[in-house]
Image: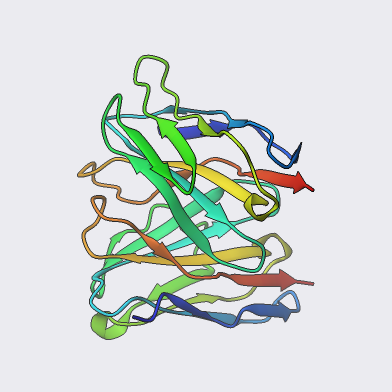
Length: 114
Length: 114
């Protein structure tokens, strides 16, 4: 069974540009989560999808971040326009039943804004 | 709110040494507790978990006991190996608490020297 996959693994963009991160969850997992780790700090929750619906987006930092999960399969996280403080590692995770089963994580996308 | 505090590294040990990584938490509600590990170049993997007080999670020689009275979930291993070198994250979630995302600590970088 394929795990959670994220693309790209690394991205270097200039301040003001747009970047789109993609996450493919494990097949059949309704729950999809985005997290971010800024250098040296905690991994912070960004948002939670149940199928195509946003269950909780309380962790999204501002309106420059837009997450979508059309059709309830893969998800994208767009940052537009990117700022220097957006640099970090963005993790995606999926699980079958929210809060009661293990969440499987992808390898993360390392985003560097210069 | 919910928070996790863990000792910050790097923690450097010699092979076969005893390991303890401290983790304490604050939570609104009854949390499930987790240790995740990130090996170099890989994504986060669940190492072990405990869902109620006095439960002991164990895996790959690592153990952690859910201590409600001290709000702690310290990670221990009796004899570490070079292959245990990684970043370890303590985390919690509140099942059915409305926000099903994980709350992480800052991570502890463990370095095991031969």
